[in-house]
Image 1 (tube, rainbow, N blue to C red):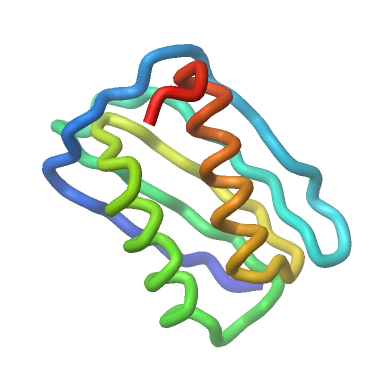
Image 2 (cartoon, one colour):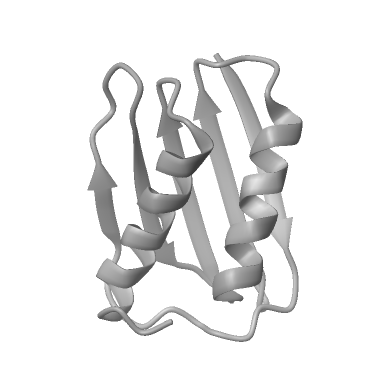
Length: 104
């Protein structure tokens, strides 16, 4: 297992809603927990993954996600069992939409 941490400063959109959990940890999938947190406008993401050695790929997916949503004061925890980058992006978008009511 590998744990990765990402922090993106100066987000523009604070979360609106309650914590949400989407996805299921199983072979080739992941779960995402998203919740509001007092982070001085930042978005923190922790990834726990069984696929060791893919830090650069995770960073690219997280940067793309942050560019799309610009979240502020948000904490995200991802538990991964080998999901592809496309599935990661889908689950992250699903988590945000679930918490915000679908507002980008």
